[in-house]
Image (cartoon, rainbow, N blue to C red; front, top):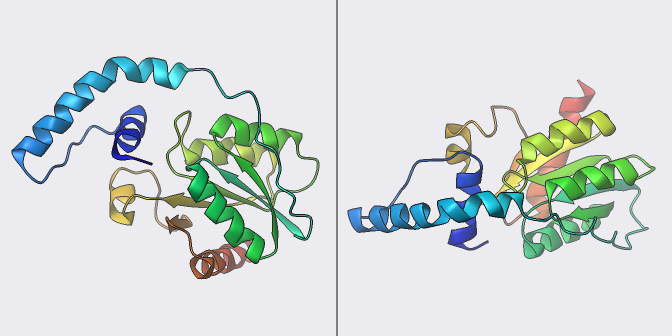
Length: 185
């Protein structure tokens, strides 16, 4: 995700703080924000892609995970890590596609690995809606933002499972173990 997409995503989800190394950086960012504001409404209301992405052939997995949001590279990396850990993987590039896959998938979905910020809705919103369809599903969020920034803006609270992008197999395995332990209590 480039800086412009990141900024647009932050604006779309109600972030208003501007940061910069110098007053010129903040001014340039503020100017960019002003220029984006008119475009942002149509960008968020734009057409949804035609439908859910194709399910990858991961028949060796005994558990199923749904990777939602993130860029194609991040989704691909998350898919590979999950496959290494024995998961069959469904992929969706947006929250709406993730919810459609939840509704259409006949079997259990054991895990939702959701980007915290997506163009159409937040990862939290996807998780809340998806849990109505698949109540047994665990949730881990992923983000390119620093953990303290995520907590500051209230995107996630304490005790919520989250991973920093890029996702590593080791970090994902630890988070999955923590999630399994929390669900068994």
